[in-house]
Length: 60
Figure 1 (tube, rainbow, N blue to C red):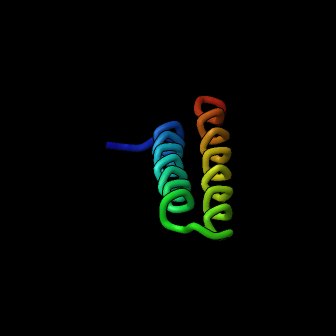
Figure 2: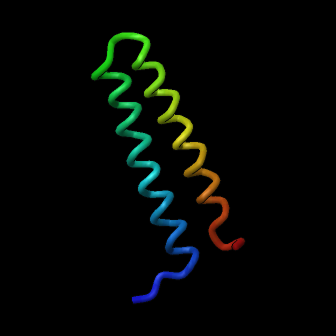
């Protein structure tokens, strides 16, 4: 089974969404201090990059 560019971008998008959810969850439930805000901000950044990867599918 060969993976073309769209399949690679789809997998990258899925993995980045999972990592973003984990980071936001860690920021919300694991850390009660300022570090929680940092984890949540990085998680939102992962969502933004995943959105870009999703938008690139079919265009590269």
